[in-house]
Image: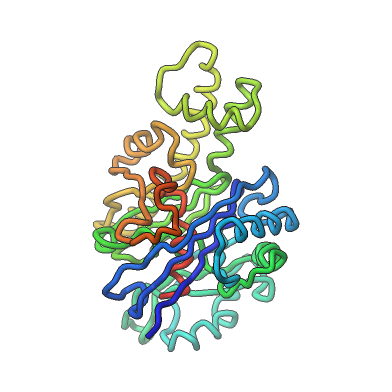
Length: 354
């Protein structure tokens, strides 16, 4: 069987990023590890993507055209991700049936569980466990319901760049595929991706997603807090916030900025910690063993230590390229220290190849 190449495309609030993975004949589970063939990114202006949804299709389409020209991807077929508060992810138990039949029947089975009409939603189901109970054979899993117009906005931007979206996946599931491998595939880990405007939290147990939350806060809120306190531009605040960090001593003229950063981070960490507490309360005896951070916001100095102290769980920076090979065309040296930024495109590529 020939090798397969897949491109995962992440449309974030601050940049578009794409990663091309090459899988051998065994796919993601084959004997040989996948190869990162190419990676590229192009920044986006503020406001082109808001809360995980494309609002300026022309701007995003042009950025994607630049990305394809710059990285020289050999195909226009892509896997794109979605993930914001307009995407409902809920643990649900349904009668067992073959996977395709289960997917086809979702609109009839889950209508009363949704805060929207089934005609307005794109539905999927991720089974995690099969059980035999009083009602017969059942399947536990995560129901995904995405607002159709949210997905369509992103798809139209991709098509506007001349690309072909072959699959739309949930960002949270992409994180699991990218990071819950190796040792992490046998533990209960919390994957926390801190983007510019959205923080995605996924609890994965034994390599399977068990809980998903999308929080409406990210690195951009920290940047805005610094810019407001110091009266500087967003670009200058990006640099300043990494110098200020969380929990470090600062010069008197930066004290207000440090307090603003601490307040935004406190709210974020509290929301993440509450998600952990919720999971622990519903899964007694099976607590989270490790937190894995990814995304641009994860690089804020002191944030990992703060989250570890607040949650009493060890925190580490995720590396989606661990165990992968890299072709010369990937420019691996350019990614040194920035591996956590490409967790989503790598995981999206894994999805269609699974």
